[in-house]
Image (tube, rainbow, N blue to C red; front, top):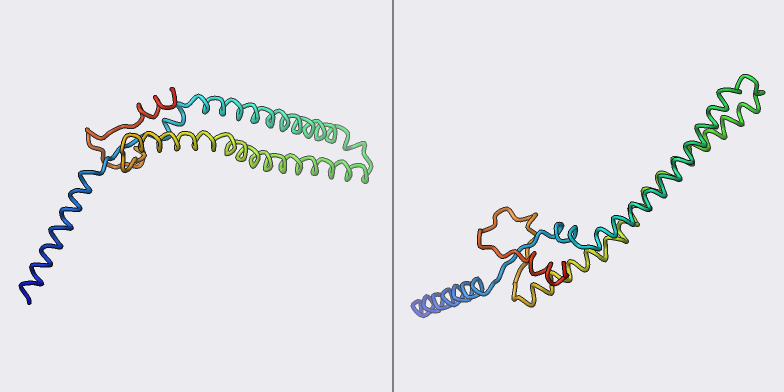
Length: 170
């Protein structure tokens, strides 16, 4: 009985070792520098140009608002002595409101720029990811790693970058 149990355990261990070795031989690993891929895509440059246009629009508006605020402050400083108490208070309140509008504008602009960046970049990342998936599947890769997260890479590791760029036509 004990010999049978030992023999069974040995058969199971050999089978597991054989399956593990077989799987290790079948696993095909590759890597890619994903960020480098994304930045090399023509869509990335186009998105960057569109984003820069939006930044310029916002900066132009912010500059205009700041110039208006500066002009109001300058006028207040030049004429403050001639204002009555009530006019001075109204002008001070107007200047503070202008400053608050500028601060609100800056906060909203930052949020808008984040949203614009996300909208521009999401399809590019998706296209890159889908292309890596297609190349990996068509070439029989089991796993593809981002080279930026790999601590060690053997000299014979397979870089998918040339195949993916070829598939993307870049």
